Length: 320
Image (tube, rainbow, N blue to C red):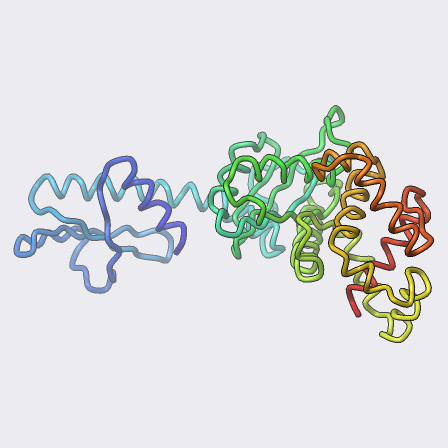
């Protein structure tokens, strides 16, 4: 049980005591002092489970240590159960709304955050930034659910904008944070919609990471478009891409410089100055690459309609 390991780690940090987990079936009584090998073993019963732990030391002092350790572990298990487990079950769709949660009409931005090797640290970072009406929980598979209440006076215009800021903060906070990815479910209108929108965020994260591994933020709305486009037959899809981009479209889609420039330009809402800063290149360099895309495809992606056409064609090309 991962939570027990975390509790033991916290106990060790706080007291220096190292506990070894053992089979409870082999432990006699609640506390067993073995003076022959100089160890003390004790049990902790919580719900339907019984845990047993052993540490070095024997005698009266060890019995006191065992009693204090049992209280520490039991209180920590209760805390995990009363906070994390109900939220996880609720967002997974297997449990009810957690006790004490006000069921109102508040809006929430909903995310599924993949932390990879930094999952634990990412989860702790998100938990530390939550406000009283926010939700977060470890959902397993290195994913943390984060439901952020969207107040009317929020500085963020959308869930996607908040995700961009969150990703930047996580990347700056953790070395190797570039591997952190965020699925954006959108805006849930009320607590009762959180499980649905978390499922959207999770789907976007899983599907988006598989479809476009070079990206970091995946919107469910865009992923829904991908799902629809994936139903096109290969023949129809290729004909469309060749018509929109060029019969030699792979010379464009395989050009990393051009595609990186286009992706950055789209992320920055077709703003050349913001995109050039985002890419750490001179604006003239970005303009040159956008001009090259126009020369090769006939699409001026500084124009919204052409940008949409180019984006859809590129999505379809990735399926071929």
